[in-house]
Image (tube, rainbow, N blue to C red; front, side, top):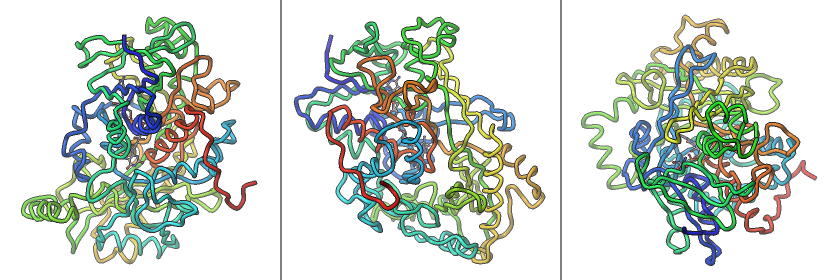
Length: 547
Ligand SMILES: Cc1cc2nc3c(=O)[nH]c(=O)nc-3n(C[C@H](O)[C@H](O)[C@H](O)COP(=O)(O)OP(=O)(O)OC[C@H]3O[C@@H](n4cnc5c(N)ncnc54)[C@H](O)[C@@H]3O)c2cc1C
């Protein structure tokens, strides 16, 4: 049987960073197991390919969530990347770190070394920021290129002026000192191509020769000897593939993402004893927090019909598209270099909000049923709005002992009253933004939720009818002290009560942050690499307000 120092399960955002950093020690042997194929498909790399990879089952787990109490009887689609780079290879390219309070809260929950001044050096170390940014907050020499949207669309400009007219200031860098305000979005795009975690970290790591990346390797379980993880079993080639075992002399690292990491733990006999017994899985280690606490951002998309200008809905058809194809081929710019979201707006739902609790995004396009997979034919513009720090929590549970059966995903969106209140406030603000004075020349009428919707109850009904995921599941293997019944890993990301096993991905977040999750997942993995290697953490950034 082959033995490596480290076996990493999942070559996604976190797995890619880990392979790179751990592989810097050239004497270290690393095996990375990825269920999906290599990331060769051109739609992964073309930014506008987002709309194609959204449903592409060859590189997407394409999960379906359980019907929730507030989703109007709908099962919400949950795409997840299944290729090198994981979800960073199919995501919307947005680079957004969150607010300092997000990480300070993690530290206050008992996690030493995870406050904002501690994690900021890792955000900086990872990125190569091109464009606006104060050096206190931004990095210039990392591997992950972060650029600002360069397409200057009249509708986007008018939207931003509309925000300013409502008292929302322009913010030159929402990843800087403060998040609040409106601006073009920052993206992981370089030269008109996607900068996935695989491109930035995994492919360069492979070149060193000590990182063995195996695709089509579906991990079925972690091998435990007593309370120690010693290796991993996988099927080479999927369900009917060849069973293979690899050993880890130092550690097994689980980076399967927020849906799959808890499922792999449960399949390995680590989790709630009641759940495991009900599935006929032998309990190897009782840990009730596994899979519990799932959080995500839930967003309705408000749509207005547009006049006097072309939106992306029309530009992606007929001869316009051919012009855009030629433009991209010649300059790597234009429609095909766009992300599904173009402008970001962070604001608060009311005067008493402790910091901006609303995230709104603007796109000069609109989607069928408000779901990002398919554009509408008639001209439209969209504002999505969501509660940044939802309180509602759900769970991920293995459906059976079959590793190929999708897990049960119940996010319980809007279960908590505060989430319903904030998302309704967001939709009301979206209406005011779309109807603002600077957008008037282009605004035909509000299509969704439509003028009949006026009261809070009517807005809430619209939210439940059309809201959807923004693809940010987290918190299913939460980091916290051993005394917390919900905690799965400690602040070194070691699984409580086991040796030789860490979980390192978006699932370890103890609480949802005010951001899309890619940037912080990369940060988590980078910080974890130092913890594993016993490296001294970079000096925390000296910021006003911190001791
Ligand atoms: C459609 C979409 C749009 C998004 N848009 C944005 C955005 O614009 N900005 C942003 O910041 N975030 C965005 N996100 C979220 C962000 O990309 C993820 O939060 C982040 O990539 C999660 O990283 P991860 O390492 O936790 O998991 P992933 O990157 O999902 O990696 C997990 C990897 O593990 C592999 N794996 C899982 N189970 C197994 C198994 N049993 N055996 C072997 N391999 C396995 C998977 O195939 C995958 O490659 C988006 C996500 C999606 C899906």
